[in-house]
Length: 118
Image 1 (cartoon, rainbow, N blue to C red):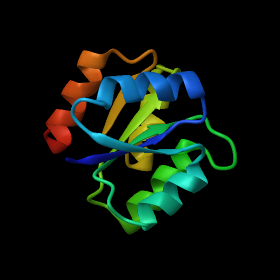
Image 2 (cartoon, rainbow, N blue to C red):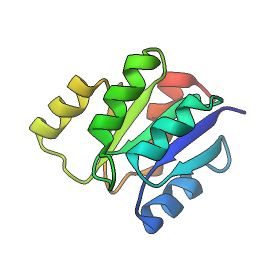
Image 3 (cartoon, helix red, strand yellow):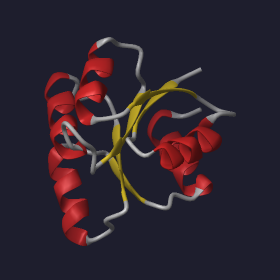
């Protein structure tokens, strides 16, 4: 079973993501961008769901660092900010896809399956 790293500082958003993913994927949690980078460095991650607004290190910076070391690792931006400028910043940081919060389970699973399969 593939493992998804959920980089999310908000507990309720994390719980929602685990509910969406629990049938199809294993998952781990990082509560900030720095933890996400460290967990990716430890290996075993197939995809990162990256919140853009987190403490310590935001999702854009974390994505840039992850993509410098692991360009093939897919990163999907998760953000409540759904402006075109936010999408552009996420794309420039290296995100493979963009999901707006609140995330629908169908859209989330479809996006993940398109990138890494089940």
